[in-house]
Structure formats: structure tokens, C-alpha cells
Image (cartoon, rainbow over all chains, first blue to last red; front, top):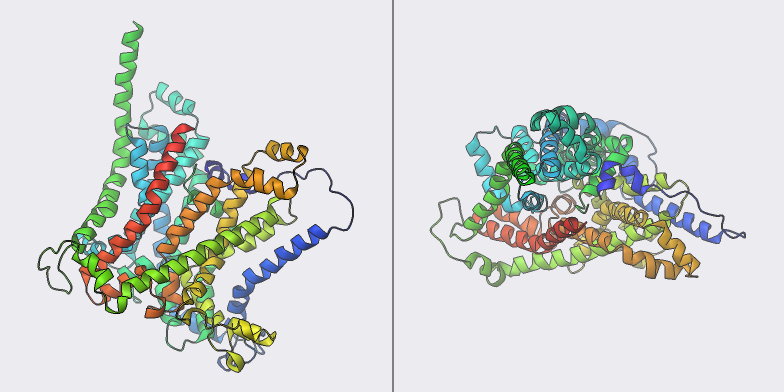
Length: 295
Length: 307
């Protein structure tokens, strides 16, 4: 799926319309768009519930009229949710931004070496790196806590930055390796070598300037996955120093949760990643496609 | 002389790959320690007699593993595996089915394709924890007059027989638990399929049409066989995600017996400080994932070399 990473829009765009179909009433089109719209309703249903419920007041949450619009729109639940999530919202930015930048830079360097500055056994090494992206993290979690403590990384966000960066190396390496393999011609490297450019200079002055599309994909991917992560967060942090997923689960996980506040909280939690998706959707898809490894 | 030139070139090459290895070596060391080293550590722990906060009392071979199958109270581990199987089958079938249907609907010049794609894919940007909040509400277990969530819709439409206890059903609860996961990832499988369809050369379709193939024959005999690699990728990705499913279950039901899968069981076991048992479950889970993923990675590596 190399091309999808290089330019995600290309492969997923429809080919130009073919010759006109037979005349007559377009039953096929009717069924097709009917189905497409039906599925849109199904997919958007949870979002509708989230938005509608988050604007209801406590006494409207009861059993009757659950699916109705609020009789009285109120921001009270949003205020309550923000009080519960506000501090961790800021902390999660402090987590996701450095993770996105660090693992992208590391991934770019690795991807460059593995595609255009190869060493003997590079393919095997690459496969060994990739395996790290599929492991269930439970299999490293028990000693991970001990080793991070032993290394002296402060608990909470710094620990999570370190951990997400390390376990983000495989996917970022994969994305950049496939990207460079598609867009960087061998001749460019050879020309650089003719001019006496070493590895670092080639990377800095020839490769990095054409790496922006790769960076956009990995930054979005790493930002989203560290923002949305719950597994590392629950193992390595707590509600006082952890990211927003922990705080949301504390808000929503009670025996009889305040659904209005929980749903406002779920929306607050999802807002940054949804914004990224809406604004930068085609690169977002590029990262996803890279997850399928195949090139 | 040409011989000498070659030798010079060879020596030159040998000199130049070393900086590459140096640049990548910090990552290699990190992954060697934090992936392979820690897996080894966990495996070593799983062989020991260490079931509380005190130091291990020695090695017990594979006892911790066999005990999972033979001596776990209420067959808890086997139960968690059964849950995982139900979840995985429904989740994989559901994402494949909806992903394929959506891709088929969109694949040929749909108007507003971008709009539909954006909608179908958006749940992927949401965390399992956040979507768990709304799905817990949707899968309200009340029925009849006290129906809530989806059951309330069924009740209102006079489709009361469709009302369900969802994830609280003792046998099929995990099938309901797969619904939110399907909602989140069917769009992803759609995107894979769309990319697959668009990677098929246009000439193949045209040739089939010229040969008088019906639409059904075109898909069945010409296009679907071309999608085998796509289907393989989709199965591997959804399969390994399913086996690691943790966030969603913790968010919808919390950690409890009814919906426990091995990934959650590890967490629950750690809370009781039974380190060796938690390690054994983790390693078992890793093996299950590896059995699927390692052949796939080798296959990808080989087919890449061929091309």
C-alpha cells in the first residue's frame, strides 16, 4: 500500500465516469443511495445520542424520551464534564504532541536507512521491528513498570511520552520506509554521494525537505493513538497524573453514571482527534493504510 | 583493471553502510530491550513461583500455563478464551461484511463518495473509551416498558421481540460487545477494500465486460480473486486487534466475569499481585497473536523481495 502512504487520495479516488448507462428509471441508483444513506444514519446514531444527551439536564435523562431532543438545552453537563476533564485535557496535549514529533523524527531516520541506505540484513531487521507493532502490550507491561522506574523516568506523562515513543517506532519506521521507497529515487542518493555528501548531510539537505507528507501522516497517527490510548495509561498513570481517557473512564465508569456529563465528557475527549480527522482526513487515512503493512 | 574497480567499489560500499546502521542503532537497542527483552523477562517471570508481592520461590516450569487450563477457579481462563472466540468471530465477520458492502456501494463512481467515506470512517478517530460511554447507553439492558437505548427504539416500533440483554447475556453477550468494535472499524476495512478495488487495472474489467460477463460474474470471477491480498490484510489487522481488545471492554462493562477476555484477565490478575499468572496469560496471548502475525510478516517480506 505504498502509494496510499505517498498520496492517500490517489488510490481511494473514483476513476472518471465511464460511458452512459442504459436509459430508464434508475432503480439501481435508488437502491444504492437509499442503502448508503441508511448506513449513514446507523453510523451517525451514536454521535446523535452523544450530542443530544450532553445538552440535557439531569431530570430529562430518565427513561422517557431518551431519543428526543432536549426540551431545554443546557450547558450544565458540559461544565461538569469540563471540571472533571480539564486538567487531564491539557496533560494529554503535553503527552500527544511530543510523542508525535519524537517518534516521527526517529521513524524518518529509520525509514530512510531501511529504504535508501541499506545495510546487510536490513530486511530481517525491518521485519523484527515490525513485529513490535503487533504485540499485545500486556506481554511487556509487567516488567515495563519496573524498568521505567529503574530508569528514573518521572511517573505520569513523562513515562507515557517515553513508552508511546518507543512503541511508536515500528509504525513510523514502516510509514517512512514505504514513503521513501516510493518518492526518493536512488539517483538522488547517488548524486549526493558524488558530491561527497555523507549519510547525515544527505538525510538533512536532500531527504528531509521532501518528507513533509510522511511527517503529516506519522504525526497524525501518533497524536491520535497516544491521545486515544487507555491501556498504557491505566498501567502507568492514575487520575491525578494521567491522560484524559483515564479521567473520562473515572467520570463515566461509576455504577450509576451521570450520562449527560459522561457524554459531554466523551465529546470533549474526542474533539481533538475528530478535528484532526475532519481537517486532515486524507492523511489520516494514509496512516491507517500503512497499518496493513503490505507494500 | 575492471576487477580492481569492482573491488574499490565494494570497499566503498562497505564503508558507507556503516553510518546507516549507526543511525538506526538507538532504535534497534530500544526495541531489542523494550520489545524482545521485556517479552523475555515476562516469559521468565511466567515460569516462576511468584504469586504475591514477595520474591519468587523458584522455578516451576510450565506449571503456571497448565494451571490456567486445569486448575483455574471456575475455569476462568477457559471462559475468557471462549469469550474471546465469540467476540473475534463476530467482530471479524461484521467488519468484513460491512466494509465489503460499503466498498461495493461506493466502488463505482458514487456521487458524493467523499462524503460517505468520511462518515463511515469517522468512528475510527474516536477512542474506544469514549465510544464505550455511548454504547453502554445504547446497549441499555432494560426491556419492555423500562426499555432504554436501542431496546427503546425496538419497543417503540413494536419490534419488542428484538429487544436484547446485549452484553449481559451469559452466552452471547460477547457478540453484542463486538457491535461497538464493528462500528469503529468497519470503515477501516471499507477503506482497505476501496484501495484494493482501485488497484485492479481497468483493462481487466473491460475485458470481462467485452467477454459478456454479467455484473455478478465480473465481481465473482474477476474482481474478488484480485482482492485476496486485501482480504488477508483485513483479516490479520482485525484479528490481531480483536485479540488485544481491552479498552472497549473496560469502558462498556468494566472488568467483570461476564465479559472477561485474556487481555482484561491480565489486568485483573495484576491487581491481585499474582505476577507469574499474569505473565503466563500475557505470554499465551502473545503466542496466539504471533501464530497469526509472524507468517504474515514473513509472507509480506517474501512477496516484497519478489517484486
